[in-house]
Image 1 (cartoon, rainbow, N blue to C red):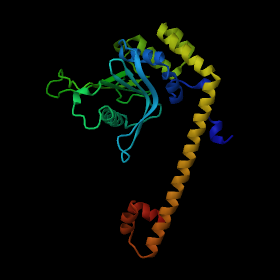
Image 2 (cartoon, rainbow, N blue to C red):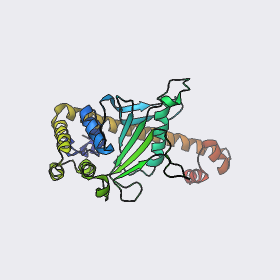
Image 3 (tube, rainbow, N blue to C red):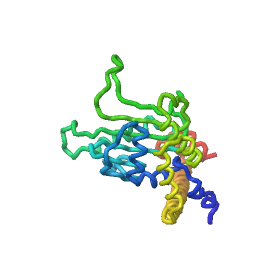
Image 4 (spheres, helix red, strand yellow):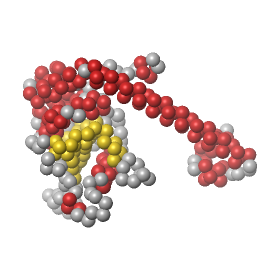
Length: 276
């Protein structure tokens, strides 16, 4: 076993903040529905679609996106839920890109009926405060600057959830407890919450962690991730060596640093570093 593999957390120690466990749990429609009801504070109709790791690509030339958990209810409302454990400063604009890609996939080619676009929720859960205001939940809908009470009725809602919020009295106990559970995923949090919904969520998580099949899936997913990293590292090394050779060749031909930088698609500083 390699050093990287030895650092793999046991399945039993994962929390809902870990993407593998989050995705695996949300594959169950009842579990997914319970989580959405806690987050949105409303009854969710039966989920007619429920997918994890759904890839969206509108053109071979454009970057694709892979949605953690994608679902549609019987009213045609789309839900895309993302778990983002690592600190990312670009989440607001990433959510904008997700919204655009999602919308572009909802209409048939040539359709001019934009009113057929489904209402949608993009939900991103993090163990940090993206906006720094101490909120558990930040809900965004497009509003008119001149009249803040006027909300653009485009059906698009983006929600950022922070597991470490401080405004429990505003969001209610159930959401606050769920977000604490997402970070800790333990029996004690469930007991303190007194929530029957959270109890059912925890029972499902315990079953997943005790499942031999899920343990195999986890190991396979980890090995695939390690393989992808190794391949990416090797590819990067090859690209770096090739670029270095070209820079040295152009320099030997008497090209100036500025010319080399333009021809190689790198900065003058990077050229100077290679030539040192």
